[in-house]
Length: 194
Image (cartoon, rainbow, N blue to C red; front, side, top):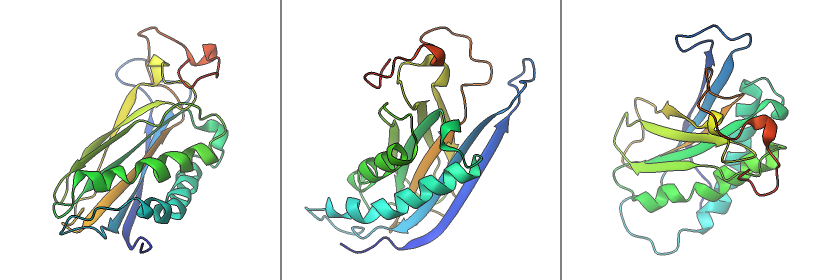
């Protein structure tokens, strides 16, 4: 398979101080790294596409490292994560599914507490399409305070023959989380759920 041909990258970092309630002592950071690559399968049906996942792994690892750096450089600070893909109109939804393995495993390789499944979203879309990337706690999917999402997109992508790849991370819970459920301080770390 060909190596990914990268056209553009972007990093977006949000600092959230409050959501209308009291100002937090320390803001939560939510960030995304986006890469737009050429879709080698655009324009026609290809039966065996799985080899491209291996080709995406170096890009995914570099994106993970760069996103951790954008959030302060310490992987131990990361508490939430998610991934997503937008496939241009000449591709198919399954091309976005190629991001599941490299996107998820790159974050699990870099982040020390990452037993939970990496949630994901994907769709086919045109120029400027946006995607809500789901976020859960890195070590326990049932930690309700970390259920979140980040909307991502790039105005001039994906073009019909491209794929937009996204990784998202947070440094904490929703800023005013108060709806109960399992707390991060109660994580057992046995199964990625609790």
